[in-house]
Image (tube, rainbow, N blue to C red; front, side):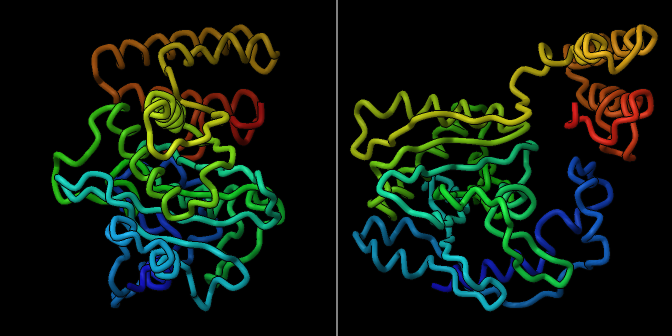
Length: 323
């Protein structure tokens, strides 16, 4: 069982996720990849066998599971971490991939922090490598320590969610989540196994966090934990939820024009354009034409397709996260 080494090798050699995304797919993270553009698709090779932690836990082999999941890779030196798969639905062989980093500064009550990427369909390893993880990947595929990593004072666990995202997979179409209830259930099954794998953390404060479409995933797992805890054998010490730029209720969140106008970032003429386009986007959503809604909002606000938008041109802002 060599997942700790081989799967990390797969991550690094595939250019840190998303880099070689097919050109026909609209990649909302394209603006982050400037420093990786010189990388090419990795050559094929044997990455070894994946590590499924669940059978070891069911057999009571916790220490063996920890040892098997421990990452030992020549490109990642000085970072303790564990990785593998939790089976969350045996009917369909549905498995969630995780990567866990113990805190650098440990106390008896150091919080455990779950990170969930948005998308939907974005690997949580994006957050690890590009946002808040212990290190980022340099141009020559070296792990470089991040100065302000969240792992300094938190135990961090990244899960590719939902099933089918990143390294997480299922053997059946029926294994994919159809709603947030199923998302929450699969994540809950993974977290229960995580706390079986690291029982010393069961009493620590637990927080679920995420961004963007994580504005739906984070409440889903929070609600599931809240519902299950009263009768659970392994109680998760849920203390809070944290959501950044959450995509929780788009139809009610879409009123950017009035907000930007009140801040003085756009004038009345620009607000008129925002009002028209936002109304058109809402109508597209109500008609189940999501491509139409995406195109309108991308041209108006986001600029994910070609890097520019009406908002950027009219306000001079390079990124909409800066207001």
